Amino acid sequence: MFLPGIEDLGSRIAVCLLVICAVGVAPAWGAPPQSQRETPVVKAYRAAGPAVVNISTTQLVRTRMGMLGGDIFDDIFPSPLTRQVPVQSLGSGVLIHPDGYVVTNAHVVQRAQEITVTLSDDRKFAATVLSTEPRHDLAVLKIDPKGKPLPFLPLGRSDDLMVGETVIAVGNSVGLSNTLTTGVISATNRTLSFKEGVEYAGLIQTDAPINPGNSGGPLLNIAGELIGINTAIRADAQNIGFAIAIDSLHAELPRLLDFERINRVVLGATVAPRRIEGRDTLVVTDVRTGTPAEGKLKSGDWIMAVNGKAATQMPQYACAMLQAAKDETVTFKLVRAGKDAAAAVKLQAKPRPDGAALAAKLMGVTLSPIDEALARRMRLALTSGLVVTEVEAASPAAELGLRAGDVLFQAGQLYVKDLDTLGMILEDAAPGDALRIGIVRGNMRAWATLRVRAAPTGPQKKTPKPPAAQSGETDI
Image 1 (cartoon, rainbow, N blue to C red):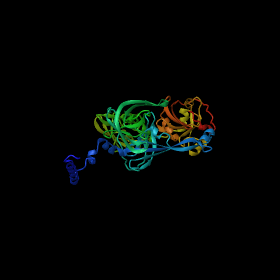
Image 2: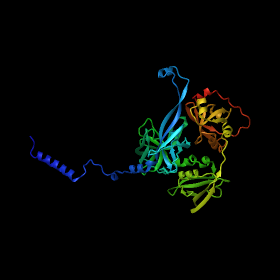
Image 3: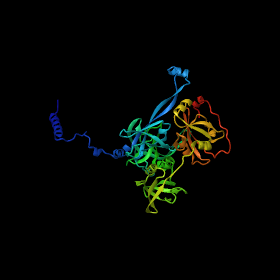
């Protein structure tokens, strides 16, 4: 038996609901407009997202060919034949200049035969590696936008980071493009040690989920500023990721974008990034005697523009200089001793060094460029680079354990695909300098430090060329 008035109460509630709907009042579950839901994270992503790119690479890996087509038989009767199989990998990157310069991790593009950069609007570009810095896991790629400026992110700063502040990671997480994750800075100035003595220092630790594929992508602060490059995760822990502090990139860019080396020109001035009175500034720190810059630029000059384009950060300066050809006159807008100034410097052409002669002189090794025919004949794992054909006894190369059939693919900060590139690296080397080199032997890849020597004083004995079949050995 119902209590009196219950039916009336239910009817009144129903009528009230009908009235609410009739007059157009939004139900409780209705979403507020986007303007009310646009959080700082949303704003940061919208500002920075177009400059984030996905990177896909293809590399050739040599594998043994099965004789009988079954795994158990292949184990019992291993085939002496091998083949090169294309293997694809994914990573992320960030555009730092509208002319198509991309920063990513060195490990994302190592050994890559082909690199494709995909923008947030799905445009795809073939990319080349300009230079790498394995010690900081940094690399710079170049794509050709064919004269159309691309979205980019200016470099932020990482010297004022606060533990606990919100950070945003964007990248190609597990193959899912343009994925955003958020978290906080858990610690700063972390150091990670890896096998083969590799160590990364000055890292930002964050609990923003960073997954495979995020490598090379940007770490942003809540204002959408680039404060780091995501680089590593802890496989044995959840939500512990690491990023290269952006100030490390500031410091490495002069070498990564060394226009004198890349374009074979001489300016003669060293320019370094500085933060003065809270703003980014480029300062001339040295002018070499006998160079075009002598008498035109002075130590302490602030560079404000190059060829009429603002240049207050290293990407702006270096990319403007990369566009300048030999014998071209470059104009600089300066601040000198607190006053506006200007300078015009005519670049000088720099002759190409003899890479083969320098390799023999300083490393004690004879190298030959690789083509597809040579790669097939010697069963090499790479189709580009420089293959060792002879090693001089008691030379730096011999002491390091190099042998015929090894492939040199990196020297210093640059990938070497020809003797000209190697020559550019070796031309400034002095006796005793430490040269970090990357070597492939069979399917094994390794980095080592070679001590450059002075020119040999007399005839040296060289190790003989081994049969091509020995070049497939993988111990290094």
